[in-house]
Length: 76
Image (tube, rainbow, N blue to C red):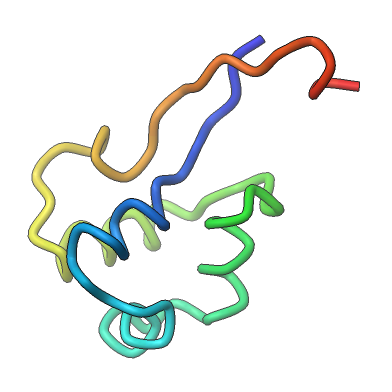
């Protein structure tokens, strides 16, 4: 089964940012960023994707979100 994965942790590392710095630059709530980073959020707003792309200079949405295969054990 496939699941949408938001690459917040990778983006933080690539751009040498803390969660707090990303929050201040994008205006996205820290709690929302943390939930996205930890896979706790079921939805991502297009506005958040746009803010991340604009602030981090991202041209390809695949740098922000992707699909990953999850094992059967993790589904249950």
